[in-house]
Figure 1 (cartoon, rainbow, N blue to C red):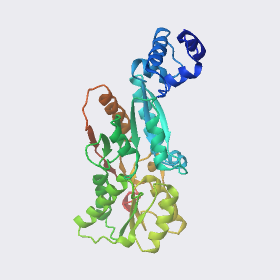
Figure 2: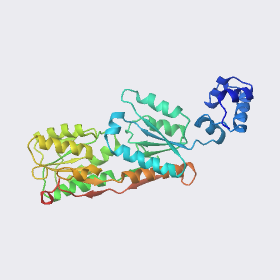
Figure 3: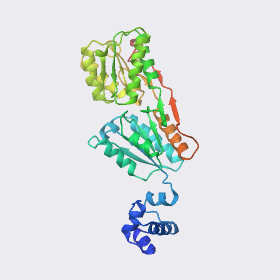
Figure 4: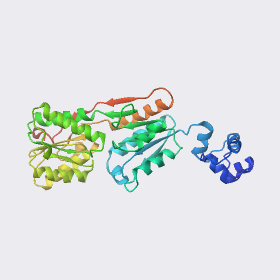
Length: 337
């Protein structure tokens, strides 16, 4: 039978607030009182919430997914729902629940990090799309709490899974060069994020490998959003590009809209390539050439890797990079339209 706090307090001979403090690991409880309350919890199989179970078994069977992005940004990009769905599916196979933390653009980054770290209701964390300077990462490293990054690590010896961002961008830009485009601009992601930096590196490497100059005047920074892609494409059109590599499909969708609004025709007038291979990419007009990254596969493998770390089947640093490959469609090559 799952009794309530009042019952546990009465059996243990303490107040209800004392039981609550014990469950929430408050320091101002005598060790003898804490031991007595925990003994009553064990004897009565008390489960008021996951905290009680963690005190008894030292496990919550909960994983946390932390997305240090504004809520509006998170749910307008199909990447995150796809990632979350795959993480929850894999966690469920091992009888884990998933707790979701999403950053608020109005909240101080340090305060958000402290709220996450002080919460004790999970066994380990997955951190997705963190910025290079996100304070949560060094905080977690200092505490030794089990966590795994989904994306490039900001420093060495961290557990992470990533896709070959630089290689994928290199393939996309090399393709644009091969089909004959000569003034190729780029709409990068936000450069405080490791994925955006890696994709920008791939863009520049492809141009240099082909003997093309890197003109920083046609390199713009977006925010992985459709509107930022639209705004950046308007700038690049004014600067005379004949093709553009967008660091995400969402930005490519905005770029396609900007091209049409300016009376130009994608593929015939402006070549364009994206990165992600979101489901909508095959249905744009023209269909979008893009770099495929296995978003569901990343979520599944990230969850498995974190559980491996929690159960001792793997030792840190546990690291994996998945391949990315180019999907050529009509937006980059007028012969395919």
